[in-house]
Image (cartoon, rainbow, N blue to C red):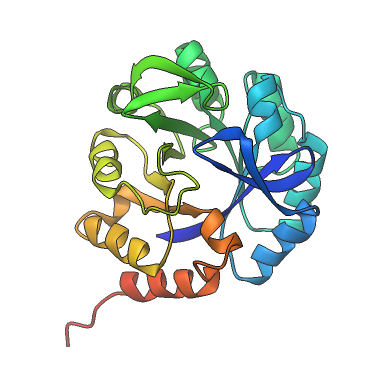
Length: 253
């Protein structure tokens, strides 16, 4: 299990939203590339980037900036979401060095697109399941689809996905802790490891998440954190160190 810093892009700045509301954004940096380099220096093993403008527009709005950030990260894999609604867009991101593209809205509106993309790029496509009250939200969380999050995870279990990012929107950016029970339940029906998102606040949240998956660590790839590491509630390096200690093999001698 790894800790994954998040960088959300809005108008070329690093921001964090509360419960996905674009009108409730806090700017944390005017230099996204420097922010990416900061998390690299802190020892991140994966970076999560969301093009918020792209999510609402339906097509990438910060692709050039993201490409520069990916280059700055070197060998560290970067996963990108927001406005990826065609094969050409996904291919362009892969050409730019992105490790995984996150498909959310288009997976709901056109399930065949997700299946075809996953088959074309096995283990490079991540399904983004963003849920509010158990229902999937789309278009930058601006609309609620008549789809249950658990049903969506179950219906894609046979696809060669890299992972599933599961976000509890009600907790995202609120520093209220993860919805660990729902995360575990969804992981059990999914066909790919889950990345927990929405609400990571402190070391205790990481301990709780790890303990819930202690008997099945293969179901959990990691946890995304955003506002907590930007506001100083969680020290990123300390968080990853804790996870490494919790996941270290226990001596039997």
